[in-house]
Length: 190
Image (cartoon, rainbow, N blue to C red; front, side, top):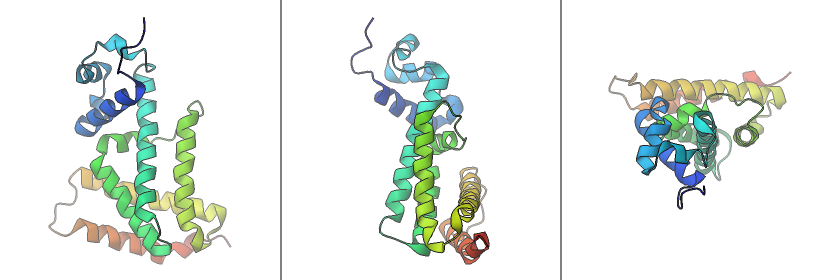
């Protein structure tokens, strides 16, 4: 039996990403995906390796889009400007793609080469932005973890409606990132 014409992995991932962003990852089921695509669920197995395979494909897609968002936000910038722009790009990605963002958070296991590769590409981008601070290899990794923690916490609180006080959220993010940058030398290896 040949795969349905027009139904390919890219189309499936795009539809699944839309479901994820509208209903969260719990809404991404093979039944919901098949209904959205107008096919029967068994047709999906010609293109994906079940629910687990779909989740991995979504994670790869999400990390690629996050990379593009951060690269675009920091393009042509350096130092504090690049970190601030990248932070804003991260928060905007999480806001625009809440379902995809959720699936990008877990570290991949060693069986998912493409996801590992995309994660490393993203890590290298962030480390390149941090390179001018001369933190050293371990210091850069500590700084990446700290920055990621700040951005994830901020994005998660914003998604859950945790910033109810009428104060500009983007100003809060800028101030928080500026405070991080003011102390970035603490990550420097001695």
